[in-house]
Image (tube, rainbow, N blue to C red):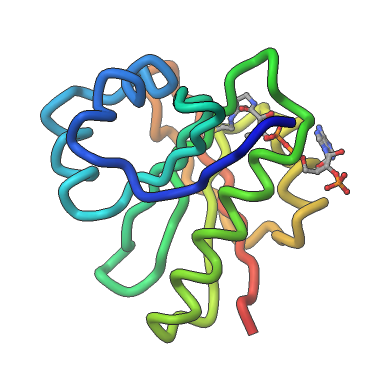
Length: 141
Ligand SMILES: CC(C)(COP(=O)(O)OP(=O)(O)OC[C@H]1O[C@@H](n2cnc3c(N)ncnc32)[C@H](O)[C@@H]1OP(=O)(O)O)[C@@H](O)C(=O)NCCC(=O)NCCS
């Protein structure tokens, strides 16, 4: 793989992030980028993956979106994004990271297990079609 750079998204990345994260309203994405809650992977100057997170109850960091460009999946980019976030959070003193997966995403759930996450809860009926979200947690200690 050519040079991969993992970094926080900047204002000018918004269009590229929106392509990877099309469900999020643009005003919301703008705010997340301003608050340093979007991390991107840049390969040869092009944005190829995006991770969006937030702080539940101002306390628990939670990944709400992770997307790698389809033709580059399985090359370690998702793992690099998670590791970048883990290091950032450890430096801030957090001892755990959470991630949400839409109900019925067995591939993503297996992937999360592979990276050391364990299931820790379920929120039913969160989506318009009635499906819920499964929550996972990983210790950063
Ligand atoms: C899920 C996703 C983010 C993973 O990113 P990725 O860059 O493809 O994953 P990586 O290459 O970093 O995989 C890391 C490890 O998991 C392994 N892996 C990949 N897919 C796996 C799967 N379905 N189950 C278990 N392990 C898996 C890889 O072999 C790799 O192992 P290694 O580090 O020991 O070699 C990416 O595939 C994606 O964008 N999928 C579509 C969107 C999506 O489902 N997003 C999640 C909902 S928000």
